Length: 385
Image 1 (tube, rainbow, N blue to C red):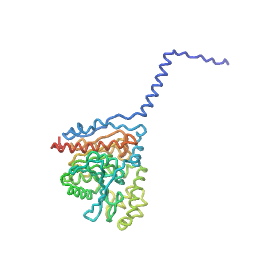
Image 2: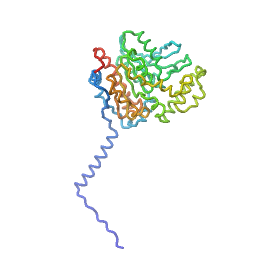
Image 3: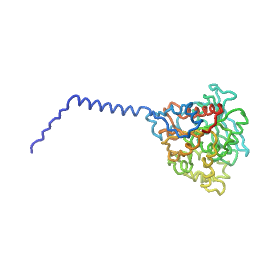
Image 4: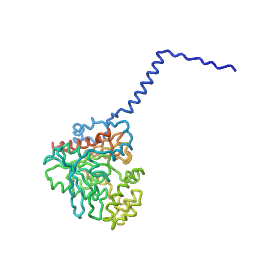
């Protein structure tokens, strides 16, 4: 067999240089794209109104793109870091408020000489997540205080290392304790405007309060970060086993802390051995012979959304692993002129980190929104279009 003869293919030098340079440039652009920030504006869902026109012009929502670092594009990285990363040091002064049934909620007021707080400064009530506390929202509270808000964190009964003086834990959609707290703050500061912010699962009680009490909430506006719209999908069926395990572990730790006070009304043993959210809720929160479906209906945060009368901002990410994008009620934001949804491509659940060393992108966005609404209200505009 004749031996094979290799004939070299001669490529003109200019063509070879073009190919090499193009390949090198393509690799450089690809590497740069990994390390560069995402510079896309969030998508807005709203109905045209005087209020929303003012907000879009004044609060710079349209001009504040979310630019996470390349390694923060993953939704799970955003979500986990949002829970565990250290936040700024904020000092609090705790106040215990006794409720009508002798129950107690803890109010953590932000204090410090770095904040310019006046007698008539507006008050911002912060609702941390279901298992959060003041330390978990320190960045947000610091941002709020620097903006001039007298800031306070609402800790539900038994939450935030507080006492439990009754045989009752507040379920996530029961706004009665919030009602008494807001009335107390209003009576203590009758000439002061009050707003509220909620994180993640902490949104359920605030949404319930806004809907159930309508125009008598005594609040001027509310902002939500990664809100839970549908508890059935987000916290019962839609949540992954990893996040369900994490959430249940923290809830069980709190339950164990108050086991003595709750032992007469809660089957502590069965609750501690349950490893899905619906079973845990059945043993801990359901009343008497109430079924779990009845419990969810009673605590549905959107049950009275038609009666919400104050301006509302919601910030959600399309890659949220807890509150799935498909469960977002876009029609609500496009129907009511007092509601605005900001949707980003990345951010996870309560993450929205552009860098590990900087506060969440949503902190300033939410605080600026509330300040803009108060500015709008001071000019005497109507919320409707």
